[in-house]
Length: 372
Image (cartoon, rainbow, N blue to C red):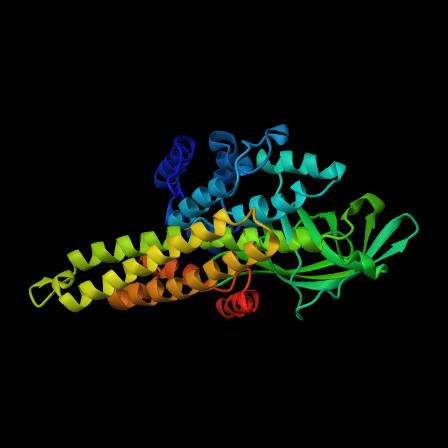
């Protein structure tokens, strides 16, 4: 099996890496996260207009470049290396995947809007319990939706929501509805509580009460299998993002150990710390292999796809914890300061261990899927 990127994928990686290295300033992005809008809209538009990566996995008919999981992996890794806070995975990977699989007239138009950078679409599916208790009932030619969604990532930035709900027909499973959304002035029927997460992202808890939507807002009657695929695709992309962040953390830690002096010499000369950094390197390499396994199985049948993604997510969870904690320790007290980048990477590596399922949840799922 060939794990090398082809020429176009290398150009994509190098072009995005150069763009982020020269245009994406970490201090500016943290300021936007803490005091500003929570992201950098000008960067988002540049990703669309100058690089065209917001349509990386979309078909050419909607303004995409016709890529697939490998292109998403390349992009997510570079965004992770730069610690980008823009909602690429939430909008392009998760919502974009759901829209591509939705046989609905509105889906193609919305995909075009995502690709050109004018629409931010996010999935509102997580609830306080593990199921879906949000309900959608018919009211004449319209739908009335009632329920609660928690930790809806990037909702404070969104222009549209994809809302999961059960209809009165239980045979349909979980349905998917499209709603226009304005975070500054939510539509009647949605109360949004927005907040900044520990890793400087934006999220919101949504209370939905008698939200009235037209009949055509029903995108998919039974979206159960599509939602499962979207979550696996999102988990694989988060794993790729983690690899980019861990590569940066390892590189910065090695460089710091070459510079910091103790007992008249760089601390990187001490064998015990060299062994520690070798262990960090091995964790990164195992994480890379796990991401390849997940990405190359995203097109497999659901059982094989889920097993590969859970193996990757569990591996990434362990590696992210190990890299983050050891990097902070080797940097000493500086590791947790706002001034040093390593502290921000540590927060992100901690948070992504719980996105699209925690490490323990994926270990349990993997064990279940591999049970004879």
